[in-house]
Each structure stands twice: as structure tokens, then as C-alpha cells.
Image 1 (cartoon, rainbow, N blue to C red):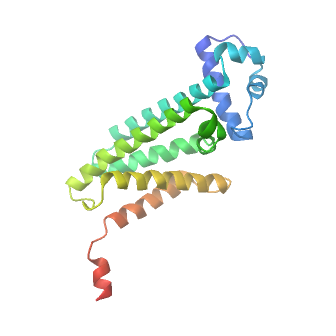
Image 2 (cartoon, helix red, strand yellow; image 1 turned 180 degrees about the vertical axis):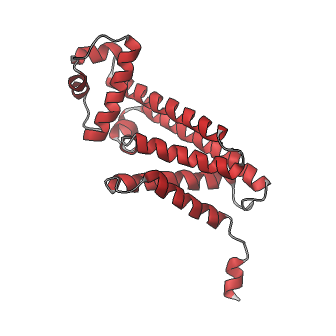
Image 3 (tube, rainbow, N blue to C red; image 1 turned 30 degrees about the vertical axis):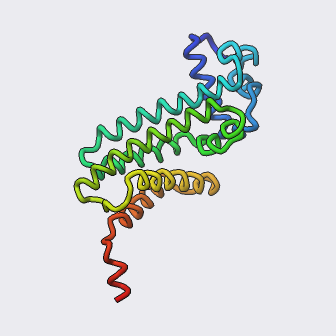
Amino acid sequence: MSGRQSAEERKAQIVAEVLRLADEIGPDRLSTTDVARAIGLSQPAIFRHFPTKGALWLAVAEDIAGRLQRDWVAAEVGANEPHARLKALISAQLTAISATPALPSILFSRELQVDNQALRDVFRRLLGAFQGRLVAVIRDLQAADDLKRDVSPQDVAILLTSLVQGVAIRWTLGARGFSLPQEGLRLFDVQLALLNAQENVCDEKTE
């Protein structure tokens, strides 16, 4: 039985069900009929809360964005120095993806890439906001001489977001056979070690 709920509670339930089903059957195959059946509502009841399928997906994207932004704030508050803040941000992102396994599929779905400009805009802004936080911390690391200064902070941020996206795709394709946060943080440490490498190491090896 679906039970009586407030409009906001029902919307939250529908959004959560979309995320669960998007992981189970794929975002491109997911229909409002699937969502209604899983919750125990009629399809018209779904459209009373979300007038179009696009509006429903937009609500899903905004829910994800809100949770991610709260996670980033908590990660930064809990870390005292730049390296710890940077690692905490990457950890928060990896943990959030692990907790919302449909996210990589949504990012590469037709719904996002072709059919829903508003949905794409939400995720583009979200990526920009995450990279902006990374850039700010990377600048602090460079100012403290804890990271090479001859690399653009923006480029380092792109490398790190690409690392997160790449390991998330590998995790998805590998049937989630490893810990996403653990593997992602291992590669983060490798990336930071490379960025901290002495500039003359290669020269010494060629002498």
C-alpha cells in the first residue's frame, strides 16, 4: 500500500524510486509506468506531482545536486589543511557515487545527452562547482609549496575530476567488484605523488 503522504514526501519517494529503478533497469529504459507500478500509484498520479517526464528527471538531478553540495561542505569543514581538504572532497564525491550507483549511467544516458537540456545544465553546473572547489584548494597547496606551481590549478582539477569519472566508469563496467572510494583514493594518492615529483628527476635519470 502506498499510504497517505504529503506532496513533498510523495515527491521525495518518487525521486528515490527513479534513482533505484534507473540503477536496476537503466535510465533510458525507465518509464513513468515503471515508477508508478513500483510505488503503487497510477501513472496519472505521478504526473500530478511532475507534469512531464523531463520535470521528473530535473527533480532527480536537483536532488543529486543538493546532496552532493552538502557532502562537499561537510568534507571541507572536517578537514583542517589543504591536502586533507582536497582528499576529503575527492572522497566525498566517490562515496556519493558509490551510494547512488545509477549516477554514472544517468550521466551517459540519452535522457541527459540528447533529450533534456535542463537536466544537462544542472549536471554541467554541478561539475563546474566541484571543479571550482578543487581549484581553490589546489591554489592553497601551491601557495604552501605542497604542489608544483608550474601546473595550472584548473588543469589539476580537471585531472582529478577525470580520475573520479574514470574510476566510476570502471567500477560500473566491472559489476562494482571493488570498493569505489578505496580504489579512487588510491589513484588520487598516485596522482598527487606525480604532481609532487621533483622536476629534475627525469633529468637525473638521463645523465
